[in-house]
Image (cartoon, rainbow over all chains, first blue to last red; front, side, top):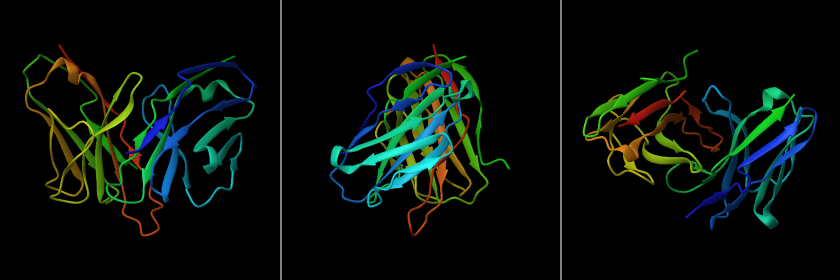
Length: 115
Length: 115
């Protein structure tokens, strides 16, 4: 079975601070996919990134960056120079390559960015 | 530009009542899913469908039934609602892709309260 752990329940930062959201996953499969979704106060989940298990290259998209490390089974998400609009619940998720294509989600991290 | 549409957005039921949640997608996606979101537990898969006329159980299927009579629609039914089914329900869809690059598109959610 797959499992995703987001140990940080809630994080509060002041605008312009950098913040890292942690994600640790468990799976026996060698091929899998990792995701991050953002859930703003409006409620709808917004896709941020998908990473394949065979591609450990880190990715940067504007103020967002992701650090994928298979050795520690982690897929951490960093927001640089945080803004109030970044306030949301962020979910890390995992999908294996076999069987059903549904995602296994972590419990989420609520990020509050104070002005 | 509808994407995934869920109806209703809010509903209050009394214990024992029945209801159906409707999910419609206009992206011609093969896969559709129903998740429930509860505080501190992330999103958990209830049922899913890999194509028209097919359904399968997820992690927490008890108390729910689903149907996929048309490719674009995925219905979630509660035959006899219980307070434990108070939750936010999300529908999602994705397209089958050979390179497995698909991502889930989510609806805006249905807030259900069972008294």
